[in-house]
Image 1 (tube, rainbow, N blue to C red):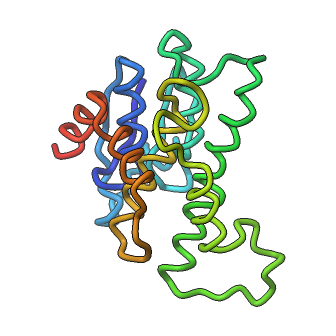
Image 2: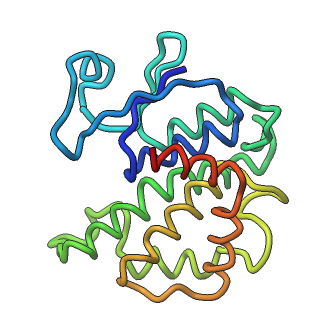
Length: 196
Protein backbone atom coordinates (compact mmCIF):
# COMPACT_ATOMS: atom_id res chain seq x y z
CA UNK A 1 0.00 0.00 0.00
CA UNK A 2 1.13 3.52 -0.75
CA UNK A 3 -0.26 6.69 0.78
CA UNK A 4 0.22 10.07 -0.84
CA UNK A 5 0.31 12.40 2.12
CA UNK A 6 0.92 16.01 3.10
CA UNK A 7 1.62 16.54 6.81
CA UNK A 8 -0.81 18.60 8.89
CA UNK A 9 -3.72 18.15 6.46
CA UNK A 10 -6.82 15.98 6.30
CA UNK A 11 -4.48 13.29 5.06
CA UNK A 12 -3.32 12.81 8.66
CA UNK A 13 -6.56 10.90 9.23
CA UNK A 14 -5.41 8.27 6.73
CA UNK A 15 -2.04 7.91 8.47
CA UNK A 16 -3.84 7.43 11.79
CA UNK A 17 -6.15 4.81 10.24
CA UNK A 18 -3.25 2.93 8.66
CA UNK A 19 -1.59 2.85 12.07
CA UNK A 20 -4.80 1.62 13.72
CA UNK A 21 -4.88 -1.21 11.18
CA UNK A 22 -1.21 -2.10 11.63
CA UNK A 23 -0.93 -1.90 7.85
CA UNK A 24 2.30 -2.28 5.96
CA UNK A 25 2.48 0.88 3.86
CA UNK A 26 4.82 3.37 2.32
CA UNK A 27 4.24 7.09 2.34
CA UNK A 28 5.09 9.64 -0.31
CA UNK A 29 4.99 13.24 0.83
CA UNK A 30 3.33 15.58 -1.63
CA UNK A 31 3.80 19.22 -0.66
CA UNK A 32 0.44 20.40 -1.93
CA UNK A 33 0.55 23.50 0.27
CA UNK A 34 3.58 24.60 -1.73
CA UNK A 35 1.86 23.82 -5.02
CA UNK A 36 3.74 20.58 -5.59
CA UNK A 37 1.69 18.07 -7.60
CA UNK A 38 3.95 15.61 -9.43
CA UNK A 39 2.68 14.10 -12.68
CA UNK A 40 2.69 10.54 -11.31
CA UNK A 41 0.55 11.70 -8.37
CA UNK A 42 -1.93 13.49 -10.64
CA UNK A 43 -2.15 10.34 -12.74
CA UNK A 44 -3.28 8.45 -9.64
CA UNK A 45 -5.51 11.28 -8.39
CA UNK A 46 -6.46 13.94 -10.96
CA UNK A 47 -8.03 16.06 -8.20
CA UNK A 48 -4.51 16.63 -6.91
CA UNK A 49 -5.65 16.29 -3.28
CA UNK A 50 -4.40 14.23 -0.40
CA UNK A 51 -4.89 11.69 0.95
CA UNK A 52 -4.76 9.19 -1.87
CA UNK A 53 -4.20 5.53 -1.08
CA UNK A 54 -3.10 3.03 -3.71
CA UNK A 55 -3.64 -0.62 -2.86
CA UNK A 56 -3.01 -3.33 -5.43
CA UNK A 57 -3.78 -0.94 -8.28
CA UNK A 58 -6.94 0.45 -6.65
CA UNK A 59 -6.90 4.19 -5.91
CA UNK A 60 -8.99 5.40 -2.97
CA UNK A 61 -9.29 9.12 -2.25
CA UNK A 62 -11.19 11.10 0.40
CA UNK A 63 -10.23 10.45 4.01
CA UNK A 64 -13.60 8.96 5.04
CA UNK A 65 -13.55 6.58 2.07
CA UNK A 66 -9.99 5.52 2.92
CA UNK A 67 -10.99 4.87 6.53
CA UNK A 68 -14.01 2.80 5.44
CA UNK A 69 -11.89 0.85 2.95
CA UNK A 70 -9.20 0.07 5.50
CA UNK A 71 -11.69 -0.89 8.21
CA UNK A 72 -13.16 -3.47 5.83
CA UNK A 73 -9.74 -4.65 4.61
CA UNK A 74 -8.62 -5.36 8.18
CA UNK A 75 -11.78 -6.80 9.80
CA UNK A 76 -9.75 -8.39 12.59
CA UNK A 77 -9.07 -4.88 13.95
CA UNK A 78 -12.83 -4.38 14.50
CA UNK A 79 -12.75 -0.79 13.29
CA UNK A 80 -16.17 -1.22 11.67
CA UNK A 81 -19.26 -3.22 12.56
CA UNK A 82 -19.49 -6.30 10.35
CA UNK A 83 -21.69 -6.24 7.26
CA UNK A 84 -25.09 -7.38 8.47
CA UNK A 85 -24.59 -5.97 11.97
CA UNK A 86 -27.43 -3.52 12.73
CA UNK A 87 -24.83 -1.03 14.01
CA UNK A 88 -23.42 -0.75 10.50
CA UNK A 89 -26.05 1.88 9.63
CA UNK A 90 -25.04 4.20 12.47
CA UNK A 91 -21.40 3.63 11.55
CA UNK A 92 -22.05 4.80 7.97
CA UNK A 93 -24.04 7.74 9.27
CA UNK A 94 -21.08 9.05 11.26
CA UNK A 95 -18.53 8.49 8.48
CA UNK A 96 -20.61 10.59 6.14
CA UNK A 97 -21.70 13.07 8.81
CA UNK A 98 -18.06 14.03 9.29
CA UNK A 99 -17.43 14.48 5.57
CA UNK A 100 -20.82 15.77 4.46
CA UNK A 101 -21.95 17.86 7.43
CA UNK A 102 -19.18 18.67 9.93
CA UNK A 103 -16.59 19.89 7.45
CA UNK A 104 -18.86 21.92 5.14
CA UNK A 105 -20.70 23.54 8.07
CA UNK A 106 -17.41 24.46 9.71
CA UNK A 107 -15.96 25.91 6.50
CA UNK A 108 -19.15 27.87 5.85
CA UNK A 109 -19.00 29.35 9.36
CA UNK A 110 -15.26 30.06 9.21
CA UNK A 111 -15.55 31.79 5.84
CA UNK A 112 -18.69 33.73 6.79
CA UNK A 113 -20.65 32.38 3.82
CA UNK A 114 -24.40 32.78 3.80
CA UNK A 115 -26.69 30.40 1.93
CA UNK A 116 -29.16 32.38 -0.14
CA UNK A 117 -31.44 29.34 -0.34
CA UNK A 118 -30.99 27.40 2.90
CA UNK A 119 -32.85 24.35 1.59
CA UNK A 120 -30.13 23.83 -1.03
CA UNK A 121 -27.42 23.44 1.62
CA UNK A 122 -27.28 19.72 2.32
CA UNK A 123 -25.35 20.08 5.56
CA UNK A 124 -27.85 22.38 7.19
CA UNK A 125 -25.88 24.93 9.16
CA UNK A 126 -23.19 25.17 11.81
CA UNK A 127 -25.55 25.43 14.77
CA UNK A 128 -27.58 22.36 13.77
CA UNK A 129 -24.38 20.40 13.20
CA UNK A 130 -23.06 21.40 16.62
CA UNK A 131 -26.38 20.68 18.35
CA UNK A 132 -26.44 17.23 16.77
CA UNK A 133 -22.98 16.52 18.16
CA UNK A 134 -24.00 17.84 21.58
CA UNK A 135 -26.94 15.42 21.55
CA UNK A 136 -25.03 12.41 20.23
CA UNK A 137 -21.48 12.54 21.63
CA UNK A 138 -21.42 10.00 24.47
CA UNK A 139 -20.44 10.95 28.01
CA UNK A 140 -18.37 7.75 28.07
CA UNK A 141 -17.44 5.19 25.45
CA UNK A 142 -17.84 5.44 21.71
CA UNK A 143 -20.30 6.57 19.04
CA UNK A 144 -21.41 3.27 17.52
CA UNK A 145 -20.18 0.21 19.41
CA UNK A 146 -18.63 -0.60 22.77
CA UNK A 147 -15.19 0.00 21.26
CA UNK A 148 -13.36 2.51 19.05
CA UNK A 149 -14.19 2.43 15.32
CA UNK A 150 -13.27 4.42 12.22
CA UNK A 151 -16.34 6.57 12.94
CA UNK A 152 -14.71 7.68 16.20
CA UNK A 153 -11.44 8.36 14.42
CA UNK A 154 -13.16 10.63 11.92
CA UNK A 155 -15.69 12.37 14.18
CA UNK A 156 -13.51 12.57 17.29
CA UNK A 157 -10.39 13.64 15.44
CA UNK A 158 -12.30 16.26 13.45
CA UNK A 159 -14.04 17.54 16.58
CA UNK A 160 -10.68 18.02 18.32
CA UNK A 161 -9.38 19.93 15.28
CA UNK A 162 -12.51 22.09 15.01
CA UNK A 163 -12.43 22.89 18.73
CA UNK A 164 -9.13 24.71 18.15
CA UNK A 165 -10.79 27.12 15.70
CA UNK A 166 -12.28 29.44 18.31
CA UNK A 167 -15.66 29.27 16.55
CA UNK A 168 -17.30 27.44 19.44
CA UNK A 169 -16.61 26.42 22.99
CA UNK A 170 -16.12 22.71 23.45
CA UNK A 171 -18.32 21.09 26.07
CA UNK A 172 -17.06 18.59 28.68
CA UNK A 173 -18.44 15.40 27.06
CA UNK A 174 -16.91 16.35 23.69
CA UNK A 175 -13.59 17.24 25.25
CA UNK A 176 -13.43 13.89 27.06
CA UNK A 177 -14.54 12.02 23.92
CA UNK A 178 -11.92 13.78 21.79
CA UNK A 179 -9.25 12.90 24.33
CA UNK A 180 -10.31 9.23 24.30
CA UNK A 181 -9.96 9.22 20.52
CA UNK A 182 -6.66 11.07 20.22
CA UNK A 183 -4.92 9.43 23.19
CA UNK A 184 -4.71 6.13 21.32
CA UNK A 185 -1.24 4.67 20.62
CA UNK A 186 -1.94 4.55 16.87
CA UNK A 187 -2.69 8.29 16.91
CA UNK A 188 0.61 8.95 18.70
CA UNK A 189 2.49 6.95 16.05
CA UNK A 190 0.65 8.82 13.30
CA UNK A 191 1.58 12.17 14.87
CA UNK A 192 5.23 11.15 14.96
CA UNK A 193 5.12 10.23 11.26
CA UNK A 194 3.21 13.41 10.48
CA UNK A 195 5.90 15.49 12.18
CA UNK A 196 8.51 13.94 9.89
